[in-house]
Image (tube, rainbow, N blue to C red; front, side, top):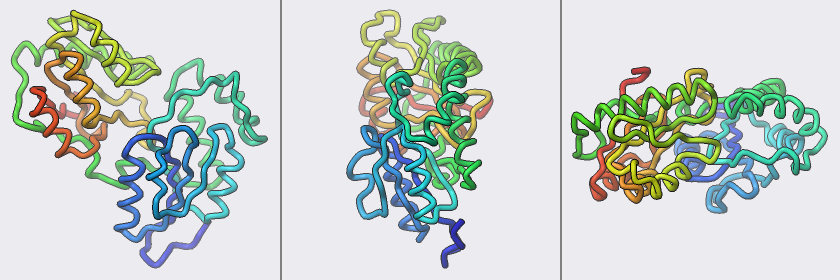
Length: 280
């Protein structure tokens, strides 16, 4: 692997999917003087994410080409971040290294997303890279145990938070998702492979969700180096459209994109937004 640069920070290979977090990490690396190579995933990573950075574009199953590029760029650490839709393994066209990895991925897919990600992380470790989580690069992304904005949940909404939290924890233990919606004492929606935004869009057509709450938490077996639960302004906006009263997220185990803007959106749209005790 590459020698440490003058900053003392190892070169990062940012394997970038969609959303804002990859660009935030890029900016942090530039501000810290950390050398950076972005492996942008076709169909997911935004064009502006690679602006001003050494980078290459890769199709999702081209594992060999991606790792070869990371080694050529003399990368030490890798961070997988940003949204990536679960692929249809039957139509993938992997390169040789990807084809060798595919049987393990197919077996893991029978268990759930976290199992798939563990296989991916293991593949990078076997090649000599050190996987790191987005929160290790930007601690400011972590949700804190506090109230974001000015609104607080009522006693009834607090009870719904507890109901949704229990459901989300069980969902995570089953490796099926990270979020649940509860209203009036009962669970009315559970996240699946489609993600939180898709869940909230389903709740628009669910009358029982009105006045309910969304809770997001890490899976009990979560590898913190990848796929931590994430919220942002879009999450708040979608929750408001669904008629929810608020959002609660596990502190220290979830990411918030632009906390100030997200809190402002919650106030503007009349939702509470709170960080729950970690593991609580």
